[in-house]
Length: 288
Image (cartoon, rainbow, N blue to C red; front, top):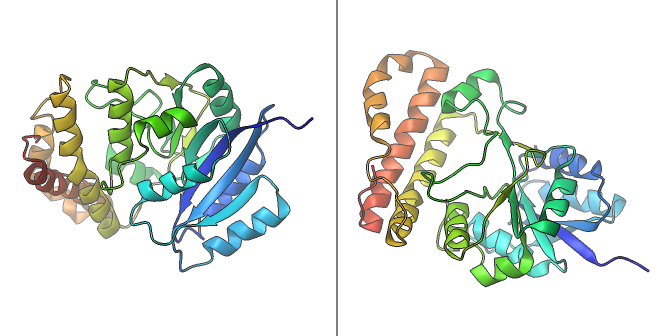
């Protein structure tokens, strides 16, 4: 008698032809005693992403390819993937990262005993040393929090009971970034705790081009004040001036602009600060 499908892993992908094979290869090597599958949702890629995934699907029955070309952000793509899941639980990873060798088992076992699971992000494996230094984070090996107010579940490394994901309304599709922080907040105020398993490691890939880093940082910053406002409205202690040191760095780091690494670091901080300023105006809140 075939066991019921227990876990569906959802990967949102768009123009990921240069990285997705490494992620799919990592998933191919996973062992777990539960029944699981992988759904890759292609978001209108114009490269060979869909062809690569389709090739894996012909070789490995655990993989399937779906298409959602009209979704305008990653949260919407992931929500669509959840609607396709026939399993009790869902987990998510990204097309440009690489899961650790025991990630599926950690997620699967974790969700047998918890409603939410997350794990570390390794920022060293896939990034050159200079790029890792631009973020000032040696490795995200401990649970991430939003100013210690609630535990974060990064969208590229978390699992959840499918019923709870539906109950919470999934990702907010009006948010182009920080939709995972928003979902984590809603999970917390609903009274659910997040289990952290150090075995559920994902190697996280940074963007290395300075202009791309700047745009990404600005986009990340735009929705962070909204999450902060929601958290404060729920009675959580979120400081209004948590990032004040970053403003001073923009002055102190001016000499760094002479080096490639320095420019990358500077543009990351500058992009985030500008994004947060815009986000404060839109959310009508103070969060600098």
